[in-house]
Each structure stands twice: as structure tokens, then as C-alpha cells.
Length: 129
Image (spheres, rainbow, N blue to C red):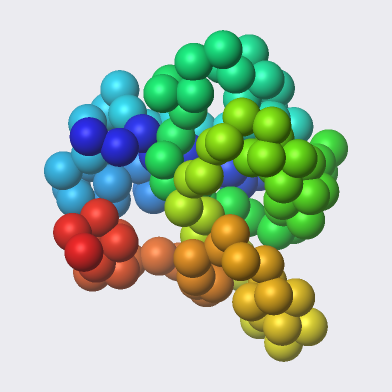
């Protein structure tokens, strides 16, 4: 089954999303939780020798401390090219700012822009296409 990363600075949101993923049928060992983009990027660099350990699906918040979603997407672009790593990225944010949405839809590596909170039906559609 696909590994999934949840990158969000809100611990409660990460835990709730993890529970929903478990209900969707994702095994706990395939769910990775990160506080911010830097934690995820450091993990990616440590796993770069074998990208099979990297998540195939990433749920990414835009507004986080240390490394926000925008900076993560920028850093990911070079990493993707260097290692031929092409995860499906879903922006999962509380931002309803149309400017954020307009910027995100320009990024070809992003699958969708989702507004928090995410629900079980949305996750089921993502994983059972």
C-alpha cells in the first residue's frame, strides 16, 4: 500500500487525519507525520538512496513555521528532478484566500487544493480511484 505523509503544524489535525486514513484502509506503518516541511524534506534527503521508502501521497499544509508549504514545494521541485520522485501532492489548508488557490493550481505537481477539515469521503476518493 502507498505510504502517505501528513505535513501540518497542528498536532490534533495530524492525529485526526491519521485516524481517517486508518479507516480508509491505510496501514499505520504507512502513515508518516511531520510538523513542517523541513522535517519532511530532511526525511526525504535521508531516504534519497532508496526512494521506495518515500511517501507516494503527501497532504501538505501551506501555513507552517520553519518551512511552510510554499518553501517545501519549491525545495521538492529540485529533489523531484534529481531523484525522479513524483509523489501526488494534495494541498490541505485552512486558507480560503483565492490568491493561494490561484498560485497552487499553477503547480503541475499538485493534484488538488482541499480545504480543512478533510472528510472520510474525500480520502476514500483519493485512495480508491
